[in-house]
Image (cartoon, rainbow, N blue to C red; front, side):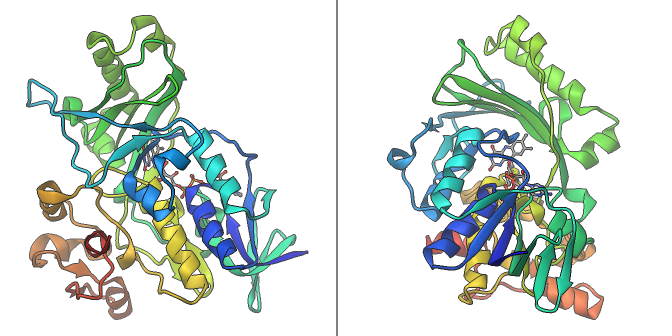
Length: 375
Ligand SMILES: Cc1cc2nc3c(=O)[nH]c(=O)nc-3n(C[C@H](O)[C@H](O)[C@H](O)COP(=O)(O)OP(=O)(O)OC[C@H]3O[C@@H](n4cnc5c(N)ncnc54)[C@H](O)[C@@H]3O)c2cc1C
């Protein structure tokens, strides 16, 4: 049996960021991933400057296609697109097939191709498929992470699930500007046209599963409507739109529901369901949680949901969205009824008492707002 002090299941941005930090500190770390990298990951590939500062690289350091995005935002009630996107940071596009591979290489830890299926405890150790053992285990296997499914079976609320459809392809007529379409034809979510620096473009759509269920609409019909719109707006030609073989993948928006650490086992990124509530940004939170889990393993920080960025938007929009879209969890009813200002529901208290409770952010809180101020 192969032993490593820490085993990370999943070599996506969450897993590789965690591994990179552990490796820098000389910690014995191994990554298991079921795929060989470079591997395709369905994703629009939008990242923010915060991702780059968290991982300490600049646009010039990145060896593949990276494009600073000029964004136009469309709303159904406005006749023109706004040259505006509410994120606090500069936005970029990358191609996940390149980005994830580069991050994994950069982490510099051994990666073994292995599909994890069975995990058990033996004293202080976690045993994986009777082939690997470790003292610390990190679940970074995305939405269907085996670590989450086996060791944290109840950690997510279904209300926060997002459905997506997308396609990334090389397109001679690709335009330079990124277009985002919010609430198109009633969708609770948005559609995107994200150009990449090397002639590729990613088109896709994401919306809350709850919306599709309630409205009786289908994501495929929304996607078709969106492609028709791109054709009308001359961003895509008809024959390309008709031949797109798109596919989808679900993931979860953040909530205060469920544990992210048990003993020496940590959930990070999509495995914990950490995408931001307003824009469904998942790469940044995966990296942030991966780095934080590494600090916790090194004994330098605590690991809890209160530490993660929960909204991508900043400024006035961000403040407004924090009121309109409160983070949901076991305390749903309290959030709607009586939470003052930006009070944060306290999971630990709510769970131990069996009743909802809240705590107000203190100056020591490293919530997203606090982190951004610190940055
Ligand atoms: C269509 C779509 C568009 C998106 N667009 C954006 C965007 O533009 N910007 C953004 O910030 N976020 C976006 N997201 C979200 C983002 O892609 C995810 O939040 C992010 O990839 C999470 O990273 P991760 O490291 O947690 O997991 P992942 O990147 O999913 O990596 C998980 C890894 O675990 C491995 N794995 C899984 N199961 C096993 C197993 N049993 N054994 C071993 N290995 C396993 C997988 O092979 C994979 O390499 C999008 C998501 C979708 C679906």
